[in-house]
Length: 189
Image (cartoon, rainbow, N blue to C red; front, side):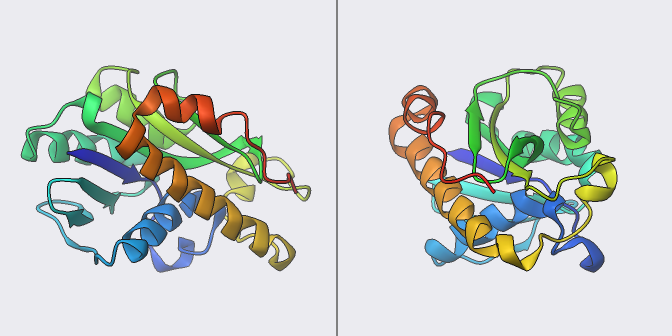
């Protein structure tokens, strides 16, 4: 079973912020598959489609995502080969997604926590570009604000593409998915 983990912050004040792109992708995929999230056995909520896939949204806060992912893998007797982490990336322009089979944390605190907790950087990931033309440093402030309304149509397109990536990973595997999607760009904002 493939386990997709969307990163974000579950507090109400953060739900519409760019840093919750991972949560948005999970929500859209769950809706498309007519499944609902429910509380897990720990600090997360999940939606499951039989033995096909599991969607997870940690409720620990972005910077502490790693421990709960380790717990989820243990509970489902899975390993990192079964895991794909979905999260925002301020170093990618809005309109781009990037799939990687492994790598460093990219200065993303959620990934930093995951790599530390799992003691490996061999973690598949789907990065959602969030840097629109209004991007200003510091990144910490930018990611914790909602998108300007003029970017909402493009954000919606990116979520659709991200869901197509997830479906491709399920059906074709990570390598073919990387080959098919990493060269796409739907119109950078």
